Image (cartoon, rainbow, N blue to C red; front, side, top):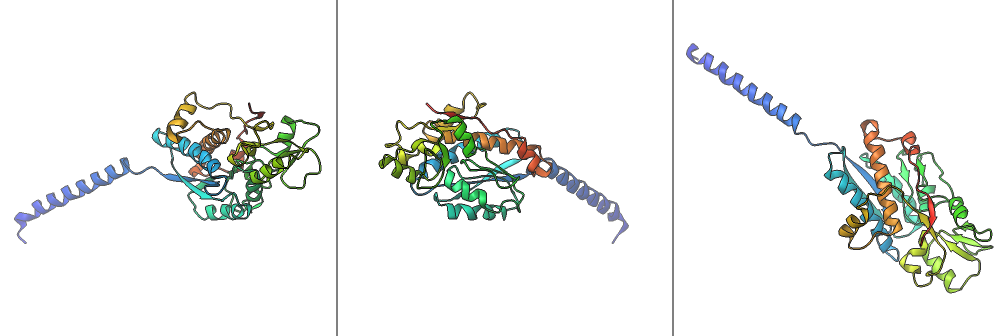
Length: 282
């Protein structure tokens, strides 16, 4: 090759290197933000389908508002149907844990499925979980009874020594926190021991029978002023207590994810969450 072309070749080579460096720098400047996931377990089919979608709309609204802001990381939702079936609910934590991008799990909103979910071996995964249904107690340090425990409901609904119950037959005054279909059957029998019920009292399956039943639910304290309007615009209906609870729980999940190294919150982060107070609902 003639020496006349060597400087030109070197010039072209230099320009190509500069162009590649510019492209690489540009790629670094506009690289995609890290995306992590929140898992949700709720009944999306069966008699409690309406409850499942109330919860889903609340979680989706919180995540959408987060993703539309400048907050990091960006979030995807993985929602699994438990059919209102405790046996199925018990298997779903392990399924969610197979995805390394899942950093927090929101557990079932019903007492009987939350109890089964709570008994599943979540401790081995280390993934923090916030339960949206009441349970007797959390069984692992990485599980938070965000919807409260039976004792919490006993304190609020103090009717003649009633205790929190999930199973039948009732042997004394009971605060029913379990399956809404069982609650409906108990009410039809006009069981004198059933003095009060938890969040399941406002499920569609028991609405006709539970109109005058004292009931209680967790009541988040710091919802945005426009929460009701935003939820109604997204879901086409006013938010229920379960929807508000799910929205608040998703907000707490986002907070601890964003603050944790590599967006992996641990037990200490979970313990920083204060569950909302349980109050008698109007």
